[in-house]
Length: 261
Image 1: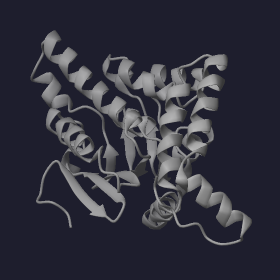
Image 2: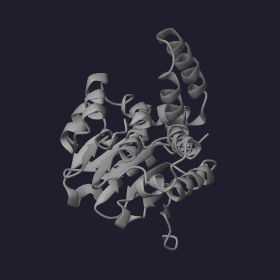
Image 3: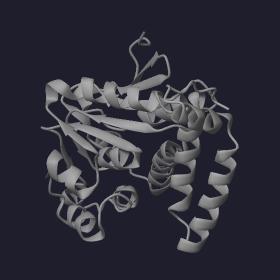
Image 4: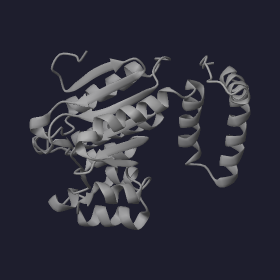
């Protein structure tokens, strides 16, 4: 069941945790309170061994319009801005380091830090009418912190084009450029995300957790370092009980029964 009305609604359905941005009238902008609520929800769930994946969703017409400009305008102080962007950066890094996959479920526009939020997630599914932009440039502000996540998903020239023009791209173009994984009709978004979470939940939890941690860590390594790290990770993964079970099930043409160890 959903929690009481709050900045972020929290729902748990078996191994899937859904966090829903709940400021539809403010286009789900990332106020300090929303950032704090998301951080607390993720931190509180990080040690849950039964958790298989997280869905980040939103209510209303927009997925997320970025930072709360009214709140920023009311606090014109450099130290405040440093703290705000550091808080946002911690949340984005928490998503990346979270032990299970985080899926963005994008039903509307995602702009500036909202686009950053999508880019920080491991996977993203969007409705066909969703649009994406890093539009701070239009108000005289280069989206520097969104650029970090965006440039780790989209090619350099496309990322810089988005950042320097502030122009929107469609969901289809976002998929082609690597920002999101799948595009579906709006009335099929729920089913598409449910199917993806079901796929993840059907996999070995050991393999999924090992895989996410390995994938994210190796991205910052040199090629030689990455292969050394990957080899050691696979050797350790091979010793897991789930791998023995999975191989035995494959050889004997039966469904595996994951033990999670």
